[in-house]
Structures are given as structure tokens and as C-alpha cells.
Length: 506
Ligand SMILES: [Zn+2]
Image (cartoon, rainbow, N blue to C red; front, side, top):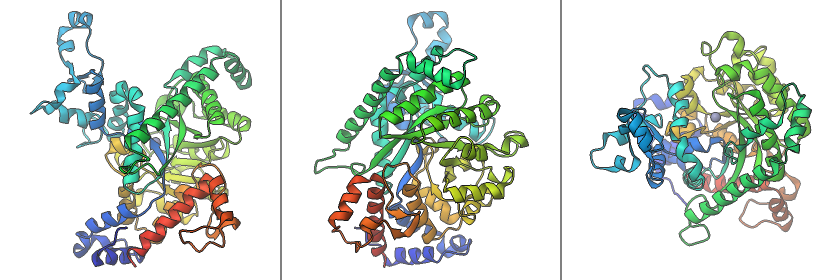
């Protein structure tokens, strides 16, 4: 176990009493940011509830995958791409010669390597002609040619890196059917009701093979991740003890018929495979289709929620700012996601103060225990929202549960520890608040089974484990309860780890 130095203990003491927003800005304490980083890295932080699998992988890995796959990069457009065919070379020699094997990036003095890293992530990004928002979202298309073939390596990197900073539960957002759901929209006919369209897709006979293939992708990724991490051997790496769950990735910025077909597959997959705990619609919320179709998309969620009440839903909502969309676009996305679509968590929720009757909305979220996945780095680099402009403290003051999340740690080149750093330095949260956020990240997870806690109260332990002393040994009643309930089990593990962590600085 890590034993902290007296200096680290002093910082932790300061953290626990952290009230003044300026304390860490004092010159004498600036150097202690180094210690703060070490302390927060060592702190068990529970789970990451908002984590896009492809956005969690570093550009360096994507370039390595491209070289391994013997494909190319476009040295002008700065994207990973298939190599030029002889026909393309003949038709457009100038463009085709700009396409070079990815392996050439690793040659000495290659400036293209650095340019590609910048293009595939927020590395060294300086806002200019291209905004942070556009650069961020544009990265996904630049590495997509290699992401499909490397899911096991991507999962390994994501889970290992989070576990290395003491985050050992992750709900990663990922579509293991690789877009096959899209083809199913042809089975429905324009003008059909939602019930008719769903029935037509189900009757096409194409859903079961897509589900089977998607489950096989997850099986393979998990098995190969465990091999990559040397799990079960003396050389096991961080991540072997982690619990991984999946949120089926839907796309907001596509035609309604396609999104509908994705929903059919997503809800069926989540019903068939307990590792897929829910769904989450992604893509920029401010795009034309996302804004134009929002109300209809919400009605579609409401339809599926009635059919599949046990399947969880979290939605990106309120990842917007004034000016990015007209004012009326800021008025209802969070509320409608919660009230009509039945979302149990909200991703981002940045524009909450612009919603109609925001106070009542916050009260609804607090009463219904709808948690917000707060992604401080992502909101800063995509939306330019940070510090006092961020609604994190507003949510906390309203009693809305909050969990910190990374969103796309590979693209933003950041980690969960830095979310906690920002929470301390920019949002003035103390250790008690951080601990609550860590616990929230498991309590409001979609992990299956009962909670360790009664009514979300972190001082009321569920009856089977209520009499435990907190030591390593647990009664048979409690052990049986933990074995049956994943959520309680991961929460129990976090409590044990928090006790060890706190003991190291007392
Ligand atoms: Zn996201």
C-alpha cells in the first residue's frame, strides 16, 4: 500500500478542509499540485460512466494499428486511410502520392508522425480556423479505418489505463455490431407506426445474427484483453480486477429510420447480454439532424422504454452552449430526455441553466435520482466551458447526483485523475465531496443487482452486510449477497479500497 509522505498528508488534510477556492492558487502551495496529483491518482475513484471506447485510445496506438494492418495515412488530409490502388494512382497521381504507408511515420525525423498525432487528438491544439468542437469531433473519422479491427487492443488500453489510476469499473460506449443495424432500416416501410416498423425489423430474421455476432465481438475482446493483461498469472497487469460493462452506441446525427433500426438492435442486444447494460445516443448534439429530429428521437426512446423497461438509458443532453445553437435549442433537451425519453442519467448537462424552469428540472432530477455524468475536460476543450461557468456546483447544490467521467480520454489526452484535479482546483470541492462523487460513480452505474446502500445513503448499509466490521473477512450472509449483486460487490470493493487509502495518510 502507498504510504504518503508528511507533505502528502498535509495536502490531504488541506483537501479535507478545502473551502477557500483560492487555497491552491497561493504561491507556496503551487508546487504541491504535484503532490495533489499523486494523491488523487492513488485515490480509488470507482467507475467511469461516460467513456467512448474509440475516444479512449491514444493516437499513438491508432498509428501503430495502421502500420500493423499495412494501411496508409493521407499526408495532406492527415487521416488514416486505405492505400491508393494502381487505378487511383493513375487517375490522380498527385493525390495518390500524398498517401504513404503508415509504417513510414516511424522513420527517424518524420515530422508527419507528430502532425498525425495532432490531427487524431487534441494534442497541441490551438483554436484557429478550426474550433475545438470541430477538431474534437473530426478526429473520430480520421482513425475509424483502424478502430473496427482492433477492439481487443482498444478495450485493453482503456481498461488498463483506467485501472492504473484506480478506476476499476467502466461502462464503455461502443457499437459491437459495427453499423450492421443500419441495414435493417430497409425492412421498415415509410409511414409505418413505430410498433409496425419494429415488428417488420424483428420479422426480417436479421436481428438474431447481428446480436450473435455482436456478442461474439465482446466475448473475443474480453478474452483477448485478459490475455493482453496477463490475467491469472503472476504478471497480471492493472485491469484484471476491473468490471467492464457496455452501453450500446446509438447515433443522433443519422436519419430517423437508421436510428430506429439501431434502437431495435440495441434494446435486443441489451436484453440478450447482461454485459450490455444500456444505450447511449452519441454524436454532436448541435448538428442539423440532432437538433431537427430531437423531439421525434425522444418519442422513439419513450416507445422503446415502454417495451423494454429494464434496459437502462443514458443520453448525451445539454452538451450545448448559447450561440452554438439558437436560444430555443437550449430549452428542453435535458428535461425531455429525463421526463419523456426516460433517461436515468444525463451526459454533460452543461446548458441546464438555459432550460425552461431550470430550478424545477433540477428538483425533478434530484427527486428521481437522475445522475449527471460531468466531463470537465471534455466540456472545456469542446465547449469552452470551465471554472465558474460550469454547472457542477449548481447540480451539487440542488442535490442532483454527480459522477465525474472522462468522455474521450484518448482524444482529449487526459485522464480521470485530472477530472478530480479540476474538481478541486477549478470547482473547489473538498475530499468529502470527491468521495461522494466516487461512490456515485458506482451507485448510479447500471451494474446489475442490488446496491450496497439503502436509498442511496452512504451511511446505511444493506441488511445482509450491515453488521460487517469492514475488515477483510465477511460473514456468509454478506458474501452471498455480494456474490449475487455486482453493484453491491463493486461498491464493497471501493469501500475497502477507500479505507486503505485513507489509512495511508492518517
Ligand atoms: Zn460523450
